[in-house]
Length: 289
Image (cartoon, rainbow, N blue to C red; front, top):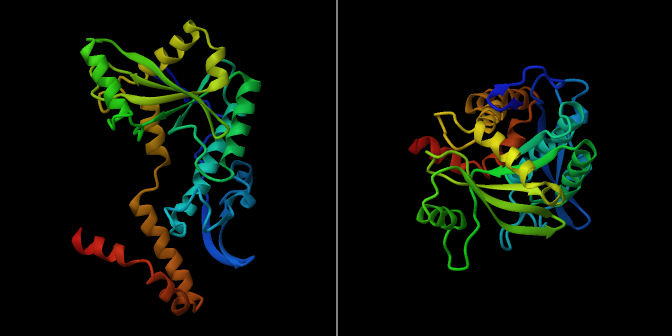
């Protein structure tokens, strides 16, 4: 939490929320489903996690598959984190933010998966009730112009051709679908930055903003985007990424514990054949470096 370039230290939620999840395949109703179980290490953290019933998907769910291929179970496993981010964001609004504050999600506000729109709608309802602005800033964008150019790159080129020297923003599209109800903008948050970003504000809230209020929101983002390590990108999001990242060392630590437990239970032979069905890429990565 930041006020411009000043970190806010007093927190109602004092630590990051951690949990383990296990995603597994099961056969029911004539097809393969992926289900996820959640394991919060501390009592009381359950309220920060999504409902497990929302983490059950058909392996042929169209929001998860690629072409005609069955959904990758690893992609399904990542959904628990996305839903928990939205659940925690709602808690932050209710417990920590005040009217006029801005919540900036890392990424778009588009519901990509089945059941995700439910969590976005709950987030918007909490924000509307408490007068908090919900937004999202994406590091990358796959949007294109109708001539096949990168949309962000095309807008940035136009800004350079018109000799824009200061920070700027440009509303480029309004999305009104149930899964993506936002105003989409392109913005440059630092004069020395070589990058522009995609920024979204929930549609109803955007339309209710005066030009002065919108400029105030963007000014706060500009103020927070002056760090020399990544000028033009809000340092709050850099800090959030660092804080939330699961390091390779952590992964290996828990992998070792898990494999040790499987072995001690005498189940290694049962699990090994299934692990070997999907670990060839990992072996090649170790060989190549």
